Amino acid sequence: RKITRAVAHIKLGKQKCLFLGNLDAKRDWGHARDYVEMMWMMLQQEEPDDYVCATGETHMVREFVELAFRCVDVNITWEGKGIEEVGKDDSGNILVRVDPQYFRPTEVEL
Image (cartoon, rainbow, N blue to C red; front, top):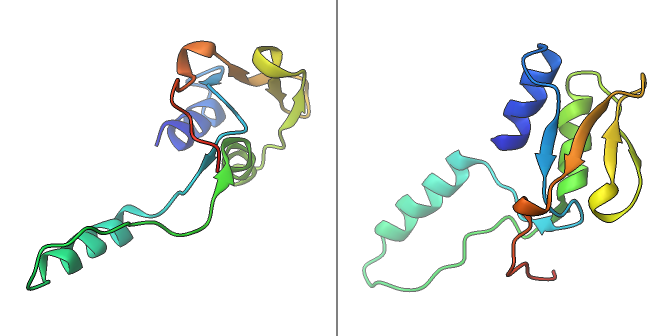
């Protein structure tokens, strides 16, 4: 929700920039409805067990950002490296910045 809300707010002029951590981090994003259904299915089992709930498909944070902005007709171009990397629109406005406070110290390589 952080990314999609920020994209909407930026498009509406209510926010200037989205601050994120590691843009190359990979995530398994799924829809809440699917996860609720998985939880319900787990509760229907006769015996308790351990389950892994996932889509099985990972995408980088930057991919999700690009897709979210594309949904509101904004193209993002990346410039710089590391904490200096920024995402700009076609007019050169910086819409995405990296902020080390959002880095996860226990990030797992996928």
